[in-house]
Image (tube, rainbow, N blue to C red):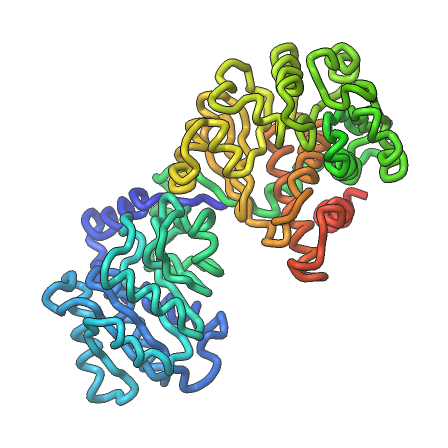
Length: 520
């Protein structure tokens, strides 16, 4: 997995290099500018000659990187318009030196324009730019943007051009991944090491493609920094999926018991069971009310159905437990929640099951999560549980205002798993898996096409299936989340984000597994 670092860790390495090893910080800035130019060129942003590049520079070292980059872009034959928001006397020492170097180049290179701006109207000079580069704040800033700087970012975000951020888009908290007003970047070149806030929350939406630039220090400089946050790589999960042995028996291929669906939400049962089979489970049994018998036989004839209730009680209750106990004990893994409804009696069933089977591997999802809401989860042993809420469900679960959770996802997620020893899958545009040890693993797959009814049901079926096949719970969960997103990415490439459904994601799973691991 790829390690992700905090601002504090990155600053510690920078300080060590400049203060302990006497690396001139001006040299690090020059190295950064060279790396920035290389990546921008390789990504095709400077294909046309001359390209007009606007660079917004702040007074700190991020601005110094911008001034140095401006000089190098101009030397490469492109037109550069540099706008700075502060007086030169307010610049950091190295930023001021790079500013002066840029000014000294103006008489020789007529393609450089440098100007201080004091009002939003001054930005109109950037309308001619093909690219605008953000070198205003970098990773050190943590507060929300205010005043003139906020106005500048809001205005620049409206321009019809390509946008590039140096290190971190201005307005983004590189630790929490949050921010109200953020520079919207097509490409973010983060310097030194990857900052965690670029990959989730508002950071994911604002950062565009993220590339790692160099300041001239090798990876060994970060060896002493212990990462707690990671990005999944394909090679990590590829080896987790067990190969299908030729003499495999259906009951040794994974026994899954799904408790999903209700009279109102029959589709949840269909999607969850479909995904469980498509993910490789050999035996899938589904607990459903009698009213769903016909639809399940039509849609999923391979699923064995365990019926509960009668015409008068088409929902789960504590009384349902005795009829389902045998299959709960039989299964290698359970899934509980998609579409079961939120009747009080159903919530009683959920709590009863969790009380009686704390050692069972189980994915708790959707409606079942509400049985644990408002900190009710504290009354249960969840060390073998995988909880899969979206942001709103998680906020209700821990009884914290949604807006507060959204501003510091990693903090609240880590606190929850440290307390419960469970695994938390916080679903979103970039799903985050929180391990029982308190680490956060961000999934890089998936896209906006998953923002549809049923996508979560498919993920639940996949998680339950892989829990039944893979002994290590964490590996099973990482694999399921990664493959779920990858299946959606393959469908987006084929059909666009508009054109695929949750059913198609379930059907795509087997092809995704074949591509990654030749599992069929």
